[in-house]
Every structure is written in C-alpha cells, then in structure tokens.
Image 1: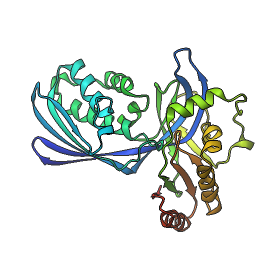
Image 2: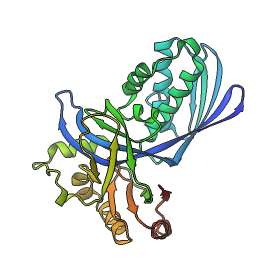
Image 3: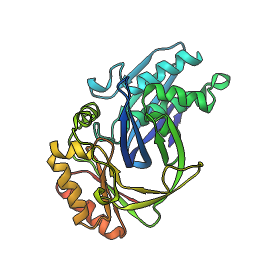
Length: 297
C-alpha cells in the first residue's frame, strides 16, 4: 500500500507473513536448509516506510530510531545497494522506518521492507527496470523470504525458498488471531537446534496439533492438495520457550480449531470458525499485555 505525500516522497506500508505450514526437509552442505512451507500474507502488523528520493548518484540514509536497525546489514540498505549496482538506477534515497512488525517474531518484517523498497525502485527505474524474473533473483540474494513479498497473495515454497508458486488458499469464513509475544527467537539458533535433534519427528497427521486447511494450487503436481497447520520448529522452540507452548495451548482452549507457530517464532496464529470467539480470544491476550491482531478471512 502506498500514499503519495509529495512528488519525491512516498509512504509505504509493508505487511507481514505467517507460515500455515513449515516442514524442514534437510540441510545442504553449504549450511542452508531445505523446506516446504505455505506463506500467507497479512496486512497487520505492518511496518511504515517513508521514502524520500533525491538526485541520481545521491546517498542512502536510513533512520529507524534504533542503531541496530540503521546498519548496512539492514535489508532496506541491502535492497538499495544491490538494485542500484545491478541496474545503474541510483537515486539518492532517505528512508524513515517505523517498525510495527516485531523483530524475531517469525513474521518476515525485514523481508517485507526490502521487497517494498525493491518494488518502488523498480517502478521508478524506467527503461532500467528489471523484468519479474530478474527482480525475483535479486530479491532472493537479499533473503529467502523477500521474493514472496513481491507477490500479492499466498505461495507455496520449496528448496531453500527459491521454488515459489502462487496458490489459492481457501480460508473463507475463518478468523485468524495472530499473537506476538514480546520475545525474540533467533532463526539461526532454531535451525542449529533442529540440526542437533537426535530424532527428527516424522510429519504425520496424528502428531500435528493443527487444523486441516485446503489449498487449491495453480501449478501442476501440487505437493499436497490439503495443507495441515504444522511447523517443524515447534520441536525445538517449545522445549526452550515453554511460554510459547502454553500460548498455543491457550489459543486452542479458547476455541481455535488449530494453532501453530509462525516461522521460528515467537508469533503464533490460531484459526477460529466463529469471529466472536476469535475477538474474545484477542481481547484476552491483549489484557495479558500480548499484542494480538484479528483477521476475518
């Protein structure tokens, strides 16, 4: 979503994602992990980016009110750098970032920010703009989740995330409650902990604490016609962060027909058949100081 505030300034809203399904399938020799996952976009929580463009060859600056976010390793800075180097379209850019997506929450905030900047740069690049396949390749060089945020809907991903397929996910009539506990779970730690598991839990229906959802895919030979709420990271995250397991159990106890960790956490989502029950659950978590968002799907 974009709002023009002046000819050279634009404000963008970068939404988040949740993983309705995430199965780690292996580890490559280069250290990357292979997986199968179903991404689902949500409009809130969101980050707000105010972009002010300058003349060609100008500098890049980032203001976020947090030194940790203002380094060259920020995905926004990376997006500007790789795009300008590859295309030669290098306008000065000043970015003001207001974080609404919590960090370390498994919601892809950094990836969403990078994608928003890439899309806007490409829109302004004129004859230097990249075709979709090259823009996706550039996005993947910034982070595995960035290409997803260039899409406008759910997607099924495999490999290290580079095999991305748009899908139709039928959640009509359900309500989704997303809770964001004030905790940070490192993705690097979570993958390392999964590597050290002596016994990898096989993914079976009977050990999946979730509700079956349907996905009508738009590509041939779909890996599955029905997607279970499942996340391999729960096997390592819940034993270390007991509160997150209790929050999942609470979502189910409050009426969710399924609940699951998003990404490596710390956010969790619950699917409800009744929007009134979902709203009551959201309010209950909010009373406990846990940010919660209701989405009627």
